[in-house]
Amino acid sequence: MFIGEYTHTIDEKGRLIMPSKFREELGVNFIVTKGLDGCLFVYSKTEWANLEEKLKTLPFTSKDARAFNRFLFAGAIECEIDKQGRILISQNLRDAAKLTKDVIIIGVGTRLEIWSKDVWENYCNNEEVSPEDIAEKMSDLLGI
Image (tube, rainbow, N blue to C red):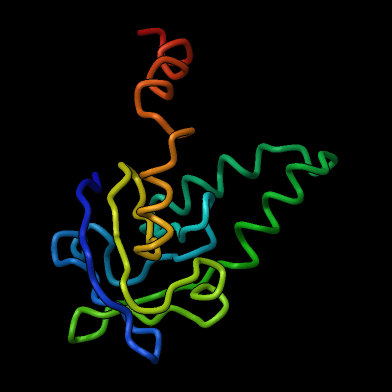
């Protein structure tokens, strides 16, 4: 399980040091794709396969299902960690998440999220995203 929040920098070539705590769980090869809310999602190959299986069950006749599959799969790249513990993020993914220099990597259970520091701070400071309000809404879904 991925947990925690780490601050790193991305260099001009798009290389980002992956926190050592996450490297073993990610494995040799893993997937980075466009995420929701302005970040990138990072999945181990196992979790990516689990997600693929779930998405296969969506009806291809659904316009929303087709659009979501396109969004997720078209932007995906397979990455590996180099000897210095870095990954290379493609320009289109850096642009999609507005990654320039300062980056936040967070663990979100089964995946990682890579955020521009500025975008992450704006998200966290957004009064519409109150943890208390979210918890109240989620309690109905979780039955707690």
